[in-house]
Image (cartoon, rainbow, N blue to C red; front, top):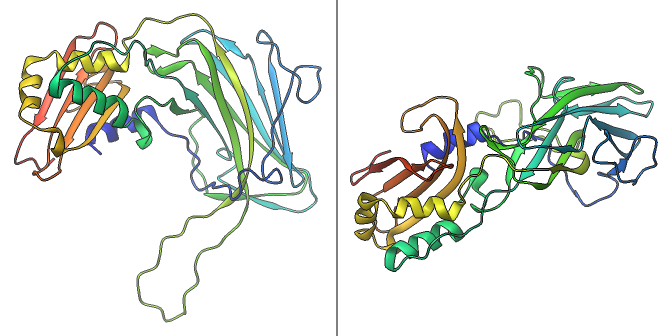
Length: 329
């Protein structure tokens, strides 16, 4: 993965599930979800113009979430409050600290249409390769919805805490209807998940007292109580070009096309294609929102690459950066 993509992943973000891995996530004993409209019963459909309430329970523990709205325009923000309660009489361990126990995540669609123009030869081969084999943040297919964590207040604390019987922990969450900062979410449904990890299922490996060797990696695993729902994005934000149109813009650059023509497809190792945004220019990464189009070559040739940034609003090339043979970056 390129340094530019790593930086973009930091900017775009991923679900901070940390060590909360849910064994048997399909097991109703370890996860549940239900929606409750104000004054309604579990499973009722909350009105898009009213606040929303969600409730899940398992093993005597509950997760309750309220949202101040279910419908929002691109760039608007929904505020949520989430509470995890130990309804038993015994203490339970949970992942994180009291201020970080609960996390939220949304799945936001990318502008995939229109597909853009058709090319010939190696240029069309690259477009097809980027759209069908390229990757986005998190190593997912380039055109898959983007996984975006809900915003939370800054929090430092232990990686695991204990919750006494009858006690609760709460956390505010918020989501702004953007794909990345500066680019509003597309109209339509945006699914979300809110989760808390509890009841750790494993422990660190044990070693003899006189053990001097390398100690293996260990990741705590928890049951996971989850809630799922959807927000509705209504209206359109500032129009942005599609993934295919971003690739078209790069292929229309004469220098890039000449570079590509001398680099046969059999040598291609990876393509990255994603929307990103940076609050400031840093190294090759430009300030503001952009489409990132990358091609890496490492099959039978020394590593080399090209990384292009395209303005997502008017399709002009912001920059194309090359690392040619020999390339050590």
